[in-house]
Every structure is written in structure tokens, then in C-alpha cells.
Image (cartoon, rainbow, N blue to C red; front, side, top):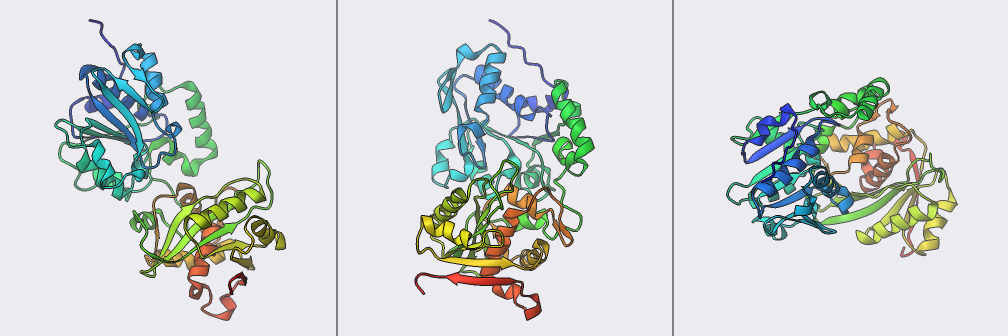
Amino acid sequence: MSTLRIETAPVFAPLLAAARYKGIHGGRGSGKSHFFAECAIERCLLAPGTRIVCVREIQKSLKDSVKRLIEDKLEALGVKQLFVVHSDRIKTPGDGLIIFQGLQDHTAESIKSLEGFDVAWVEEAQTLSARSLELLRPTIRKAGSELWFGWNPRSKSDPVDQLLRGLTPPPGAIVVEANSNTNPFFPRELEEERRFDRQTNPDRYAHIWLGAYEPSAVGAIWTRQNLHENRSAKAPSMERIVISVDPAVSNQAHSDEHGIVACGLGADQRGYVIDDVSLKGSPRQWAERAIATYDRYNADAIVIEINQGGDMVRHTLTSIRPGIRIIEVRATRGKHVRAEPISALYALGRVSHVGTFAELEDQMCKMTAAGFEGEGSPDRVDALVWGFTELFPAMTMINSDAQAEIRHDFDPYA
């Protein structure tokens, strides 16, 4: 009988013991995913018939999963002939199985299909919602089953952080911190990238490479803690939904994005960010995306900034959907000034994000009272601000001096 040798970094040694919960938190290049991939293969070989589900919060395609990593490990370890790789799953010895799924797609009923699995490996666990964590934990219930989590922390309020690094972690949980300096297999190419980021991106270096919590800009008018604390798993019944658009000036490789955000006013009179579908592309592409989102959420109107495009902005939309309701707005104040009343809604706990919108939230936490401290233009934030300005008009009309937008409402049914 041949012996399979797997080299393991010393930092991961505690995780080789059996435990219900196993977690690795840290920055880029720590080897978190490689270790868990090797553990998955080892378990399948030692316990034929093992079933493993590899999950993340959102998985739009298998390209988002760890399937390719596992395939590469099978090749590197010389055991590929013992597994059968299909397009969407991997069959393992003893009629076992490795599958790949997004937790956001599951309901309380559908997740029951995972009850007989031995391991749930959660990749990019920092994006895991509280709802998904609540669904997953009691579902993986087979005797001796384990839950593995790998993540680069964003905030103390991330559900996985609260579970495994909070005041009362589960009894017997094994959690280690791993970074590039604990990885004996850290490649030279990544070391060059790490040094480059240390010199050129010092504000985010600790988060990217050392697993520190994600920074907000000094004086940011939104905080990650507020966003996480008010996050919602699903939206309530909506009184109004608008699709707000901040179109970019041009369509070049270096151009800014077209910000497109779906915002809603719930029956509870709170605001909700329902979707962020921003993109780079031509005017027709942003218009088609905005209209498709309008249809998807049965929205009331498309709110669009016309500073750069004027009448052409409205024409782009009506050329695709004649008669669609459009609310045109023109900015006369800076982006950060327009954003402050909306950030006040967040501070009051009156806005929730339905799910996680990483790119939008990154921009939000770089918006300060003095301006935007990120790269390029905060088009996603600008779209969000226009949406909530429409849904909460009193926030920007407290007095006439504060009013900063010109509004034209084109309603074919008026």
C-alpha cells in the first residue's frame, strides 16, 4: 500500500485533529485554501464514501468555486486516477462526492439536501451572511461532521468572526491565524507583490496581507460596523423601488463605471439596498442593464443623473423602452455633500443592505466629509445617494438653501 505524503505548514498542525469547527483567518498568500483542499482529498482517501460540500455565500458559476484548486491538488498529489472529475462535481473513492454551491441560493427546505454530508468547507467566509450561517450550522449534523472556514477578516461584526473569534466561540473550535510569514511555500512572485503593496498601498496593506480588519478612510461618513450591524438577509414588502443610475462620461478601458443600484423603501419605512449591478460598458449596455433591473424588481422609476449626458441620457433609455418612467436629477453640489444626509440615515439605523455588496461598500467607506479618498469616481455611491434622495426627499429638503438638485419627472402615465 503506497503512502501519500502531504507537506503541511506548522501553523496548520492544530487543525489536523478532529474538531466540529475549524477556522483559518489571515491575509493573502497564507495557504488557507491550499491546506483545506489537501485536507479534503486526504479525508476522501482515508474514509471512502466521504461527502464534502464546498460553499461560499454567492457562487454565480463554478469559476467562483474551489473546484479547479482541488483538481490541481489531485494532479500534484498523484491521486487523480482515484477520483472522477465531472463538470459540476467530483466523485471520490467509495462512491463519495465533492460538490460546489452558493449558500445564498438555499432556502430552509433546499438546504436539507446537505444533511448527510461529512464536511462543509466555507471559502471566503467573511462574506457569509448571518442567515446563511444559521442555515448551514444545524444542517451539517452527521456524526463526526465538521465545518471548515477560511476567511480574510473585514470587520469584527462579520458573522463568521463573531462565531469563531467572538467572546463565546463554540466549545472545542480550533482557529488559527495564518499569513504569508507563516507559509513556508510562499512563492517568490507573491513576495514581490507583497513588497510592492507595502510601498504603494500602505492603507490597505495590513488587511490584504496580514489579515487585519478592513480599514475605512479617516473621517469616513459610513462605517463598516454600521453596514454589518444593519445588514438584512431579505427585504420586507416594498412601498417603492427605484433603479438609480450614475452614468460614466466615456466608454474606454480606463473609464469609470456606470453606477446602477436598486434601492427600496420598505413598508416599515426603512431604506434597503436591494442590488448593485454597476458595470463598465457602452451607453446602451448600461441602459439595458438598468432596464433589466427595473423589470426584475418591478421598480417605479429609473432615477438618473444627467450632468454629463443631458437629453442623450434619457434618449438612451427611451430608445430601448419607450415610455419608461424616468426621473432626471442634476447635481449642483459635490458628491460628498450630497452623500452626507444619506449617511445620516445609515447612522440612525434606517437603511439595510440586503446581502453584501463589496465594491459598493468599499466606496462608501472611503467617502469622507472632505471628499472621496478612493481611486477614480465613486459612481456606485453616487447612484445609491440619488436613489435614497428620491425615496427620502425630506433628508435633502430641510431648507431651501440645502436643496441641491434639479428634478424632472417624465412619467408616461401622469
